[in-house]
Length: 546
Image (cartoon, rainbow, N blue to C red; front, side):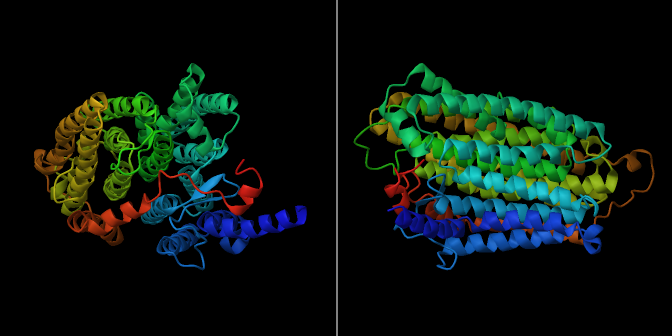
């Protein structure tokens, strides 16, 4: 019996490693870059191209898994869902979609760093090892199926992020940003770990599907509510959701624009994926029709709690952004507001809501990355990130202003740009969810979603003012040279930088018009999402999970 079980475990390990292959490639890239520094030939060379090549390779493997190619895709179940590594992680379409999102974004960030010259050759191995290490942690967060893996994934993502936030050597503001990030992050991790210990101690398991099932079936005891709240605090910190946002503006202002852009998108995607697994696991209704035979009791708490958090987050982020004069701080508060918009999709507790969040994430990747890229190129050209220094920028570099206009107007939600489609999908699932709750006799939850829909619409209008304010300063105000009756000095940017920004701007327009392929992809990503993963053969033999 022992020999047979060992053979099954050995066979399963190969299958699990095949499912985890993209992350293993990134781990190999980290080890390779560290080893290359031991040789004089590579000691002073920039290793960003090594990181980019292996990230693209991992992205290619993930694409093959998404397309179901047998050589790298080990799925054998009809819905494509299975547990790996004895149930610690789950491998499904949702996991693969998040990998595609994370690895695509990482490749674009590495390319941006190569274009801006951050880091230099001497520090390139350290920086890109930290970057790829954070991405591996975020990927683990997105596929976590166990409380231990949630904690491990969040810490793997957080620790490299702390170091990257303070990567600008000799800059006091950068060091302060890293210190604040470490202190706040450590506190949030401690609170989250305590909540996990309460939940695992109460139910005697840390296996997520079992834990969520016990929480749905049992009474909502104070210890369970407290444990869930503390766990939510840890996730809200990664999302920069109000009132756990306080680290975000200071860290973004002190960190390099490239790092701030990475944190604004990648960490949000991983945290939202984790939150989606928890929310749909506790109160998920699956398709909106038919009505479930057994109503999850936790749904009455989850919907108002997430809705309240989302409403506060989006409102605070938008109003706080209006008074900002530093572009990175303005985009930091914009990031907070968009986290609120994305949380709105999860208040429906449906696959459709989770799919709308995935669509929004892809749109947010293009919009926010482009905005931070403009800030990075402006920093290189002028040495400043304050809005006042970019008065009349359209006279000095029209392309930068035009592309920034695409990014900001898309963030606002102006059609036909992709940001409009992203917000429309969120508002659509809120409306449909409210009608569904009303139909099945839950007027309180229905009114909650209707109220959230109104708040989202009003906040979209509010965001218009601070996004347009940036364009107003750059387009309508005169540059300082005109005020002083001096000739306007052009502000050139490298050709490849212009190509980079132009491609992102065109993508925002093209995907905004032809959005159906992305819509179909996000629908495929949430197939079987709210269904529990079927244990593997070995798990059935050995207690069905840890």
